[in-house]
Image 1 (cartoon, helix red, strand yellow):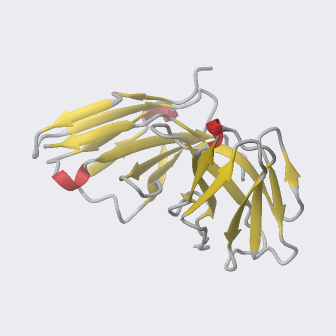
Image 2 (cartoon, rainbow over the protein chains, first blue to last red; image 1 turned 90 degrees about the vertical axis):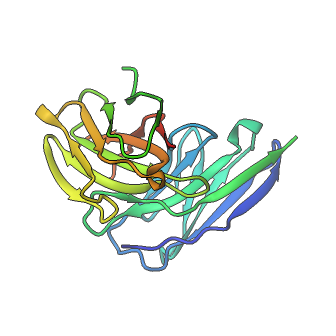
Image 3 (tube, chains in turn purple, green; image 1 turned 135 degrees about the horizontal axis):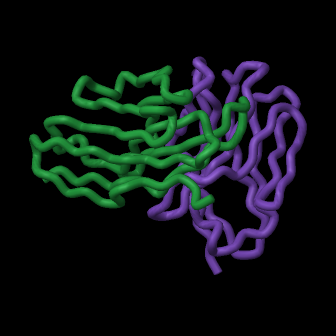
Length: 110
Length: 114
């Protein structure tokens, strides 16, 4: 299974952009990178996913390195409601299970 | 659609008792997953169903754990002879059959074994 590496925690000021990095050097050429986040006392929720090119949606942007060994989730203007654990994940080798690590705990301060 | 629904939300049981959790996925979703999450850790994969077929089981799923998805609709996860180490949040998720599509998670069932 592809392994992802993320910082344990990050801190941001409210209304500032946040760049959450992820290393996934062992990912295969056909595996998408998925990002989920988990707010306190809730189940994870989907944020964004991509394969090679940068992706944007209403929640965030995803910048994928050209060699696909790393990616960055970008929150353009952090709000207090964005305080959560952010997971950078890929599917298992079987293609069925999303492999979560410990994620990055994002603290947003006013 | 109300999303993925899990019941009960909380369960306290005595060690050695059996417990059963239910998950109702989003109605048109073929794929259903069970995960377990302990404090400070990310969710750990337990098992996966495609319609009614259980296609993958993690090594974490000991023989005290069994999951079913009769008729490919709702799913149940049963833990027999519970142990204190089973205390965790049990999460259910569902997704459509299309590859690389997003998974929708329920709010989980918090199990406490005393």
